[in-house]
Image 1: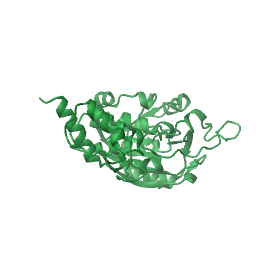
Image 2 (image 1 turned 180 degrees about the horizontal axis):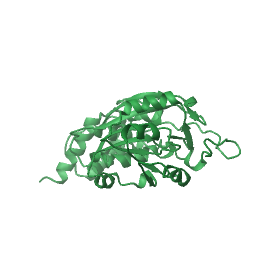
Image 3 (image 1 turned 30 degrees about the horizontal axis):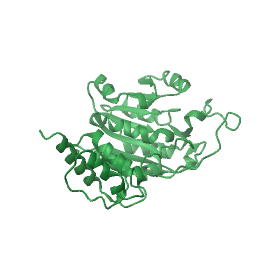
Image 4 (image 1 turned 135 degrees about the vertical axis):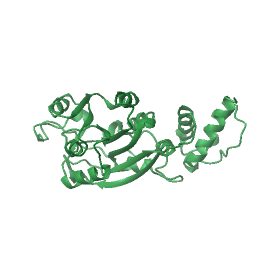
Length: 294
């Protein structure tokens, strides 16, 4: 399981108003030692989980069973892959690093998909596996964590649960409550579709090389009956609302609602961070109903 270091230019904090992660000195072949013969790659921001106690705790939290359809994103040097495979008996992994993918292919009972997880159609993957609900696990790259979470949101209907290692700050944003600095677009969209909880804190010393930020593991379970609302419309409402989060919504969302000929009631004398998730959902539902009365 590789820990992916945040990049300065793309730390996954473009959504929801989180602060940028501290930049650390780029890892190069001259400044790093190989781990099991593999140099951590700068472009993938690889940091590898090496703490056996943490690995065991994560596996216990996932509790893999032989009949599960497990898919690991970013297996790296297989620190988590091996115990998952031992418990589940079979496993599919998605690895973008060509060298690591080649290593993984030498292991039995392991299906290796060499690809960028952002490009993987998880709904189609579930269909290939007899429409089995997927259990997604892994270490999401810091520099694409937010886009990847939004990508996975589109496939939530075929997912049983997700256990991900992420930068702790990202998880704080995912579970944030209204009227807090961490509350934003990521909070609203994910809380609409998932029940989420942090299950484990993971310090930098658990990785080689250690990142400059704290990490944590989050459990995400798709809600069995999420509010019925077009995802694209809800996303647009939230994106417009948080486009200028310091301003009142009358400067942003009000104009958008007027363009949609919305005649309902919605308090725009608030900032975006003050509006609860259920109110964003209700607004999107009302707009959808007005546009499609039948």
